[in-house]
Amino acid sequence: MSDAYQKLTQELSATIGGIRKDIPDVMKGFSAMASAALEDGALSKKNKEMIALAIGVATHCKGCIGFHVKALIALGITREELVEVLGMAIYMGGGPSLMYAAEAMQAFEEFSQGK
Image (cartoon, rainbow, N blue to C red; front, top):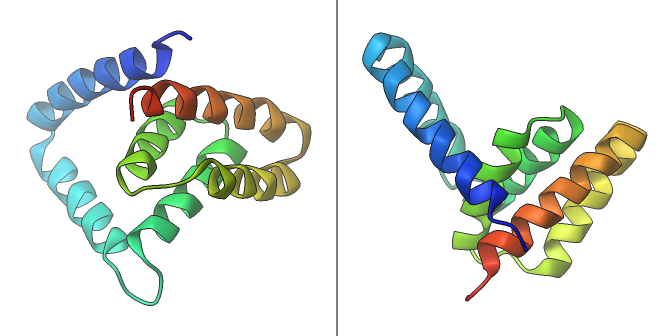
């Protein structure tokens, strides 16, 4: 199994770090929005991350897939939960979402190795 998603998220994190330096106020606002959106409420943080992953798959965002699968691994997502999330993303996004659901499965396999 490749480590493509680990490499992708590391590279994007480094690039985002540079963007954070270039436009700190915008990035502070983005980080504040992300923190507020992910707070436990009527939905748990895990449920919210599952929604974010489904949107990432449906909108064909590899970076989103990587970061949200990694977060979901930390939150204890099971393979069974993941495939149901991917089923909804495929349903909502059709054939192109199926291709990105396969990407999310690759990211899950990669990030869950050794756990």
